[in-house]
Image (cartoon, rainbow, N blue to C red; front, side, top):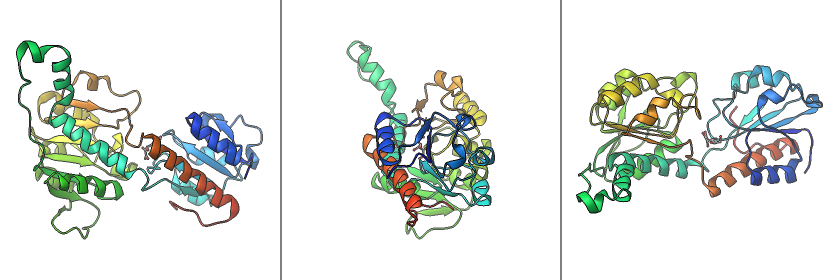
Length: 312
Ligand code: 8YV
C-alpha cells in the first residue's frame, strides 16, 4: 500500500522511516510546526505521529481531510483527543507491546538507586576498591513495601515484578482492582505514607498533573525512593528537587522530566538521583513492535478495517 496522503511527523529513526516509506510513501516532517508550509496538506488523511510536541486543534485544522492520528507510544497526552473527537478524527496508540520494557526499567532504577550502583561502580573504577577497601554498605531492596501509583497495564507489570522481589504491594488507582493480597489506597498521600518505594505509572495530562505533590513526597519521607517512568508532569518537580536536596527523600529514579530533554540542571548535581533519558520503551525489539502497531493502525484505517488499538 502506498499513499502520499500520509504525513509522518516526528523523529523517526532510519529503520522506522524505511518501513513507513515502503508501506505508505509518506511525506516526512520533523515536527508539527512544518505542517503549515506543506503543499498538498489538504489531501492528507493519516498522520503517523512520534514525539511529545503538542498536536492539537491548530494542527488538525491545517489538515482538513485528516481521519487518523496514529501515535507512536502508549501515552497520547501530546494529542488533543477532545479536539480530534470534535473533528471526527480517530486517535490510536501503542499499548501492551512496551509494558515489559518500561516495567523492567522501573525496577532497574529502583535497585540502582537503593543499592547505589552508579556510586559503587565509580568506587571500583576510580581505584577506591583497591585503595580503600569495600564500598560502604547500602540498603536492602527485596522485601520492602512498594506503592504503585496507577495500576494500568504498566503498573501491573511493575507490581508483578516487585511481588517477585517479595515486596508488600500497595497501589492507588481510580477504583479498587481484583488483586488479592495487594492493598488499595484511595488517595496518593495514604499510599505514600504506607510504603518505602513509590513508583509512578500514571497516564500523563491535566488530570494527573502534580499528583506527586509536596504532601505526597513528605508522606513518602526520608527513607523513601520515588521512581517515575510515566510523565514528568505527574510530579511537582520543584517539591521533588527540594526534597532530594534537603534529605526529605532518600532518592529517586527518573526516566521522565518536565521540559525534557532540557531537564532542570539541578538534577545533575544530585547524587541521589538515577537519571535516564526517557528510554523506558527504548529497546530494538519494542520500538520495532511499536512502529509496526502504528503502521498497522494506519493501514487498517486506510482500508476501512477495525483499528487495532483505538483511543477514541
Ligand atoms: C515514547 C512513551 O513514545 O509510550 C510512551 O508513552 O513515552 C515512549 O514510549 C517514545 O519515547 C517515543 O517518543
